[in-house]
Image 1 (cartoon, rainbow over the protein chains, first blue to last red):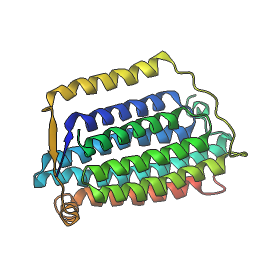
Image 2 (image 1 turned 45 degrees about the horizontal axis):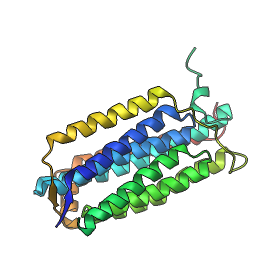
Image 3 (image 1 turned 30 degrees about the horizontal axis):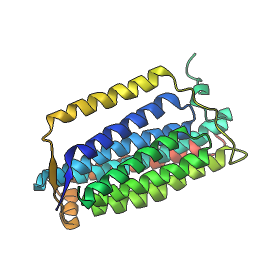
Length: 105
Length: 162
């Protein structure tokens, strides 16, 4: 049982989401794009874990359970993302997402 | 100001700085080193939030597996591992969008009760009961997603496919 300022975690979480969003909007390298998505997803996980600790009833455990599921989903997403990176690198010779325009025409 | 608050401020600042550095430095290998520090810092924050199982999970899955996967991705896609990325032009639109999201989220924090709150801890046994009891369908769905992702990833990286 510890007492912590409630706004701190949520402020941190929203700032991390902002950094992740900025990365998603600016970076064109596929691996950096994946990393930016991971930062944004970690912000969401932090929110779930914080509200689980904030609640204190048995219902609060649902927050931690959701965080466990999201960690698994994020790891899966990175694995599929890197498979796409390898396929993109073989097809185009580059992992710049701005060059992956095969379906545009 | 108690010790936990000091730890939260320090860890929070490290997390913000490392996340920003990871997305701003120009060498991909340095990006992955910074993101590894970010994942470890978040694990420490989960320990601070009395969620030790999630802290260990964060260390194992993110700081361990995801970092190695990303490093492997960098390793196989470039000729020289320390080649630099093109510098990003920090355009006004992405920065403005990110700032608006942060300001809106911070504004919505005013709805919550302010001041220090007591954090509650749960036993890991209760978490497993929750995961395999009421939240069982989510876990099952996660398993199915992972299976289909595995099949999809193997299909994508298969050799000799046009």
